[in-house]
Image (cartoon, rainbow, N blue to C red; front, side):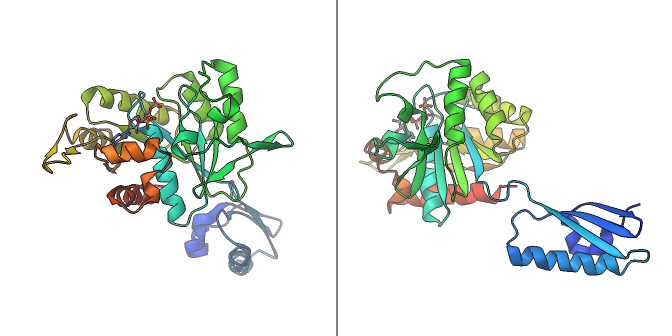
Length: 313
Ligand SMILES: Nc1ncnc2c1ncn2[C@@H]1O[C@H](COP(=O)(O)OP(=O)(O)OP(=O)(O)O)[C@@H](O)[C@H]1O
């Protein structure tokens, strides 16, 4: 026998199952995200209601929490290389950290790990009991596949070797971190697929430039996340529009509005666009993510980070 969940009002949303046998009611409750005090208040309310039901002489409440303590991973992908995926990843991470979140970044781009450069660090992570300890830089904890090989060493890892290295990053010591941005390798192949399956991100962001060709690849990336049941939090259009530093006129070298239209067509949110900007590139190359500064790029990345968080399940 079961108890009718509607008895429990708003708390019914947290009920996973109810059972009544030999006058004992057993309630399984999802307590994800609740603190100690809230958990015991919830337990008290459920017990009181269940006890008031006829034929109930004892109530047992089992609390479960899905990965309550673990960080939430957000994958940033792109159908192809060079669209600014790594630049967007690091700036989202820095923007989130500035908003007060405890943020990590995993640079899983085995074809061109760039996070150490973008964050301006050559520090190597230490390992404790075979677990990598992320380095902390510009308010963000970071582990990069680039830290596992000597600088400049081209990575041509395939299959199990790539998966092994990437698993080490995901299984690093991320304690104290709430959100981890995962800078995926560009493309939609097996390496990306197995990384998504292993790290189970709570959501994914797809970066695209406005050209049709890039958008075709972005669609593939969205398909890949769909196949792996990872909700797409949205598309970010990068390198959209260029403001001439001399005359101030804005032009659209790669077209405009393509990503927004593609997002609408595929039924995924459009998170916003970033212009092509020489200063963004220069600051990035120098290891100073503009999201950590004061200019318009910082505001733009903050807006994107907020839009992304708003889509989290
Ligand atoms: N909005 C932008 N304006 C100007 N330059 C940009 C912009 N976004 C990215 N770039 C520059 O484009 C280059 C490629 O960016 P990035 O490395 O982030 O791309 P990516 O998609 O991660 O590429 P890959 O995955 O192949 O490494 C970098 O030099 C970066 O500074």
